[in-house]
Image (cartoon, rainbow, N blue to C red):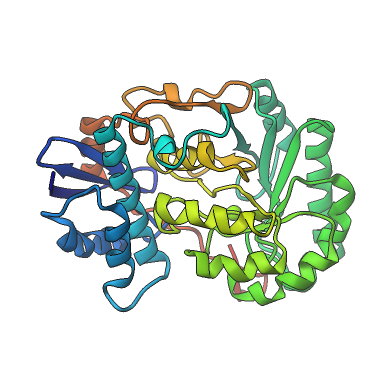
Length: 381
Ligand SMILES: [Mg+2]
């Protein structure tokens, strides 16, 4: 079997899909994307495709080695995401060829269902109670919310109080048996994070995510030591090597993104690395159906797995949503806040080829907003 064609599709709301076709007629799908830089990743996939055309798709690990290291320069979000989407598509082809779900090829399922959480509150949390109540009624046992919008370098008393009030409102709506995770989104300095974490601790969040930006990862040991709240990070880390310092700093939850951190191959290895630190896996996935399907395959086969992000109804999904490009939505029909074990071959989903091709004709130009502080200086989004 040989790879004969590699195509990419720029589809709303902000995604990039990759389709790999073989001379046996087997087709695999992947989702290589950096949100807001989809066109750049598309170009990277085009360059990497030069290596793959005419090759055996089943030599996934050898391709991963060459695509990741063969260009001498390595790493970073663009290249790692291009490799990630290709890797997902190759695993999809392997599963369809062997007639097995990807989780079977990773060692078989270790759980019967995967707990997922829903987003509430949008970029700047509002009307939280109503949104949380709706998600609880839909069966979810956990939600995630942003802590705050643009935040002063040293949070004011009012800003700190507003964060605490939002999380307290969430806790009140959820009760003690459900979970709220809080995303700092790298918007806080380490000093502000320490101060806010201290006040959030009594509200017992599941975890606090990206307490600082990734380039301040050297400050994680101090933050971990300062709080009983489990700290999470990883959506902007792209390899085992980049997770190692965060894990040795004592983060409780590793959040690699299946579409950024080298795909199924590398995230499966990151999960094993995290296990040696007693850390749990909770893959980042505010993305599309292929990234979620890849995430779930890893979740089914990973013992130290905590919970899965998913994007249905997320504030970014304006012109299309999680189910828009699926021929059959069954794999993402959540029951009691969990995705059921899926034994279909490959990634376990069927992409609507015609819908994807039609969407690519209009494409998208999604960009994240650029935020400013009150004095017009740059603020983290
Ligand atoms: Mg996040």
